[in-house]
Amino acid sequence: MKFVALFVLLAALSCVVAADRVGIVVQYDDSTFATDCVEFSGVITAYDALLSSSFGIETADFPPYGPGLCGIDSVGCPASNCFCDSNYWGFFYSKGGSWQYSNVGIGFPLDGDYQIVRDGGVIGFRWGTWGQRPTFKQFGDICIQSGPQAQKSEPKTLGLVLSLGGNCVGKVNFSVADEEGRVMPLAEVNVLAYSPGVKWEKIGLVVVDGDGKGSIALPHAGHYYFEAFNPMYIPTHTDIFAEDCAGGVAAENATDSTQSGLVLSSTPTPVQLPTPVPPKVIAVLERKNVADGLSNWALTDWNAAAWLFPWRPR
Image (cartoon, helix red, strand yellow):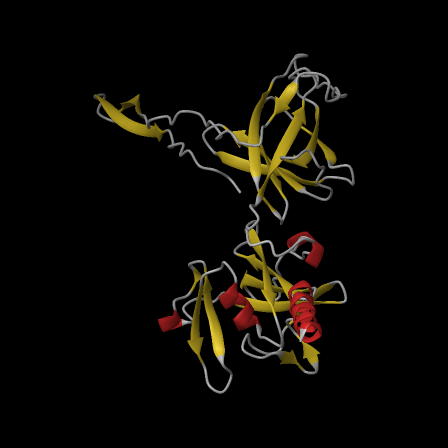
């Protein structure tokens, strides 16, 4: 009897140790995603995995295809109108180190002969249009070794670092990193210049190098706006006022990051745009001679200044 009891205990412990786990990635938009790790046993579907996760889902039944995924965490459509938008929740699973688009719905355990939810695998969901994929994460990035990770990851915030040549017009060096100081290779930096009374105009889009660094030449003195993008992070922005220090001669060489520049912390500061200018109407009078020798004053022209609306360019 003691031997039988010991065997049963060891079998139960082996089941606990050998619990299967799958990672889940949910991408809500271009910059925001969350992850979860779910423990399971046997053969289950993505629908089962979502029900066991910390995500809140909205589904509608479509026989014979099973449940359709309408919304996740209030993003998407309600179950009563699952196709309310041109966007939809794309369904993916990891295979060979990349995403594979699922040819079946979340209620099917197999895509062809491939088991979708498997131990050490990852399933992903992306709210968007056809062809858009969620951020790819390896199983080890989501599920830690000691057990399931039931907390969603928080999206990171980029930090944009600018270095100006003594606040003079010329080449601006900058680098892009996340809030933990890791460089962001291939991040994109949008650069816009402000034209008084007109609008913000894009002057360039720079893709930083493998070290997260890039540069752009500012053509003239004035107000410039920089915004950094990376698909896995929340965009960040900052603005600068470049001065013409040499009477129209630009400073060709920018200083390195040890000199004075503008550093944006992990909490971005809102862009301060110029105060709106109220419109003016100016009447211009011109004296004209009439054929009979009399004089007459006539209104010939007027001019109105445009409103300047504060806005955040993208």
